[in-house]
Length: 111
Image (cartoon, rainbow, N blue to C red; front, top):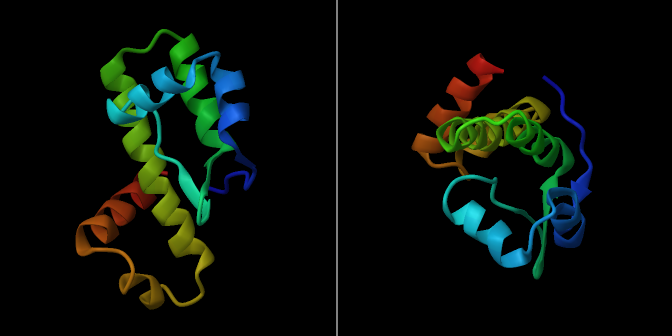
């Protein structure tokens, strides 16, 4: 599955979610939102499709547990996307711990 490669900075994410920064980071801590992607030494962003997916299930009234499951799948899909984009998947094995490689393989089956 291919995802959009648009990355949103914090202010854009906060605007789309309608939350304050403190609540946004509390959601991340509670597993209700994905962790940011580092895009620089002092810069982070979130993939646009992840923000849209989490907003959609929130609007649909899904439970916190269902949202947590989605967050786990979205973060696992990041690793799958990296594996699919890599021409030599063995190069990623040096960067991903075995537990994350296994999670990435499971996510690949799901997506």
